[in-house]
Length: 245
Ligand code: ATP
Image (tube, rainbow, N blue to C red):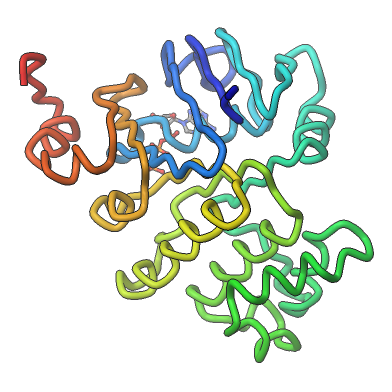
């Protein structure tokens, strides 16, 4: 089966200068793939390039069965095309409309009239039921993150990019939210590419893992293997990998 997302030799960066080099990465149906790495490794840049918000600088990028146009096309067109195909991106800052209620934010994520998708999203995050009339700007960090995920889910995504959902959240909140991400992949068959700094929590729900270091893949493998080889993971963060290990 073809992957939902495929990057082959992708270079990504800003103003023509790469910060991510020669990246090969795939995400399959129902798969949760964690993209890890220390600050500045290139994780956010990778997600922005996949969702068309940055032009890729080289290589091949296939999202949901179709190639993604490069920098010759306007960003808005690339991003809109990808959203129509079923790509959802939950950015680091969650991109909520603070002056709108939680319910209004949620409905903005769904196709017009798709109340069933809104209800399904609420089933994944039942706490949002009681918050639906409150302005998004008044929600706690954890509640805002639930809302951002639920809004993405309301669009019935086939591929979900999640950028550091743990940012500013207590570890306990992250431990509660991540299993829901796993359940979304299991229940809907969506593929998930998850950027995360809380490594043990990400490893607990991921199928496969890529660790970026200075824009290049330092290690990749099954999450179950890396859960047993924490030493290898730590070395990849520190740039101290022995290739024979
Ligand atoms: P973090 O975990 O800290 O969010 P990251 O792995 O997501 O880090 P990126 O944000 O992708 O890393 O940054 C990769 C590199 O690109 C860094 O060296 C960063 O300084 C650089 N960078 C990020 N945004 C820009 C920009 N708008 N213009 C130029 N360089 C940028």
